[in-house]
Image: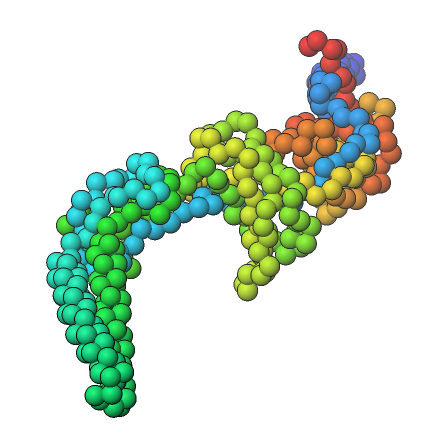
Length: 383
């Protein structure tokens, strides 16, 4: 009896241990199931909320196709005042930014030799004039004597040659006076055009050599854009085409027109220089940088903003909204331009696309990349 009683007790203990172990295993399994359910719930991503501005409807648009241009603004008329004679620069009072008129005296060059040479040439001319008077009297006397038969015609010919020689020497002396006078006049520095002083390259008191630059004068009433255009784009440019330009610091676009195209291409990069005349030069300065586009043609096609086309894959694609989910659709890109109704440099750049139907809803570039199949919902208008 005691042995049986011991086995009963042992069985009860085993059953109790088994029941406790079952409860522990069951609790752990329940916790695992709950954690797995929470993990699966976490994997469910809520729909991405978009505004109406984030979804674009693909439609046909007229694109103003143009050539991008940029470069420095330069004055159409500019000139350097140079020293025509060597000497010390004196009386130069104009400085950068001063307005000068054409013909205005802005300084002079001190050269004492030019005055002495002018006086020397004048005295030589007076001496030659005296020689003409003497030769003229001899010629008149000899001619009278020949008519009276007192001397031969040979003597008259000699006096004629002497008079001709004296007259030639006098004309040479007069030319020397004119040259000396011009050298004297060249000491005066005058503004060749009206405009503003851009640079003062020589200071008062400095000695200037012949052809040394003294000041630079620019006329800001007529400004041009000197744009370097690639070889492929240059063939589309023609004189008379209009353009819209922007300059840093000036909000409104500036109208311009192609007035000249350099016939030569640069030897290195084969670029071509095009010159565009600015319609309004108010507030502009030489050397400012301008950029814009020259309108060359217009094209009607299905178009999207360039920012809506993504290029982080081997082929360009757009993010299309289909039944509330995002799908990636590869597209072929065409010409680029701006909306023809706007046509300013600040307009959004558009690109023609193929491989997508009209009316498709395309996500704007501001949305950012979304995975294919991502759920999307549109926020109610007004939010």
